[in-house]
Image (cartoon, rainbow, N blue to C red; front, side):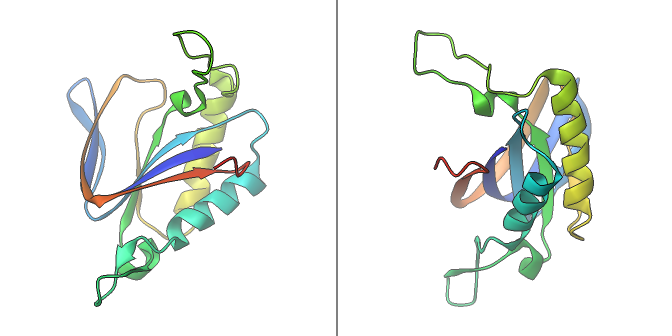
Length: 149
């Protein structure tokens, strides 16, 4: 599983002009899945996301987590996180989970993330989405369950 986390003042997802998910202060999580992802991987990633200290304390240091600040989480599926552009000019997405499996993983991850107690919103799987955000900082973190980076 791969995640691009962005600390946001606010973020929203629209599909065909309709708002399908939005948050105020919190984290936007762009998530991609591979076939080997399971509940254990997704639970560890959800725990990491809500506990990462990405928000500033009174001294201006990033010492507070999403839980500490009472923030929200906007989760958007993005298979292109597994795009491999090392060869040629067109990325390969063969490491990304097939669409039907990725849908099941995405839906399961939404449940796991919601179970953390953090307010969650979501994009729409396989839809053409417009994602709007105000990145706060900017703060952007890459997470990979295989710890490749």
